Length: 296
Image 1 (spheres, rainbow, N blue to C red):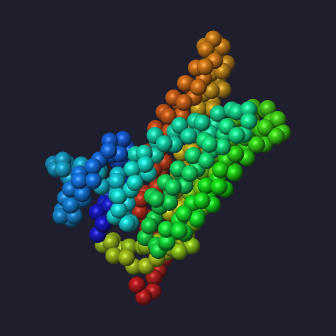
Image 2: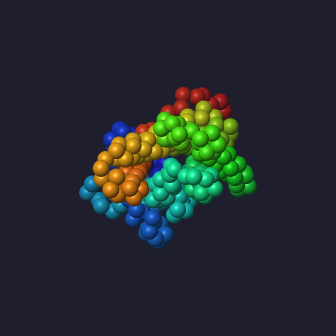
Image 3: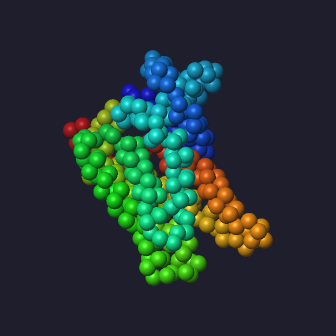
């Protein structure tokens, strides 16, 4: 059985345990691991079928699990490209979220941040999504292109409405972009992983044997991921806006108006730094499916 799949099946964890686990897997040093080190770690796990994450006496086993879980896709057993590993998610998306929520005087200056953000998140969702069903490369490319275009359009819509109709109300000027970012991020997951509910994903027994494909399991996997992304980006966009609103009323801001950018960027990075492991931990990596399979 694929070691990563075996880990998530056997290691039934609580939310706190999953959070602590993701704090390790999101370590930026996982981005610079050599292929040789990853292969050695994988070989160690393959030759020690009974190796547990709780083997505290063997530091090599703990390090091997960390390297394997943070760099290898559990369905395909292939290396995840470095920019799309879980530990790369925060460094890439935090600046994009910050730029996407800046107030602008023209729509053109918002196109690049929106395109960059949704291009990355769409690619991240497709690459890290379930890969147990059959799909052709061109299908992923066509699907990704359509999702990026539609997500960018809806991401730019609140800015267009503000500029077109001169919406200066504080509620619409600040809340509207946050609401759209939250909703579009969730829909982006649903759209970019739409093959999973339609074609079904592999379902295994406790021993790791594939017993069939389930559309219900695919739907649940996509729904859970979309929910976690909405929580992640909604919270990460809302809290900096609240802090900025009150900061503008201080005397310090009146003397140093440029400090607002620093505060907002720092707040975005700090909030996302906490919310990324929280959102990844909300739901377990594997779940139970009560669907029956005939002829399995």
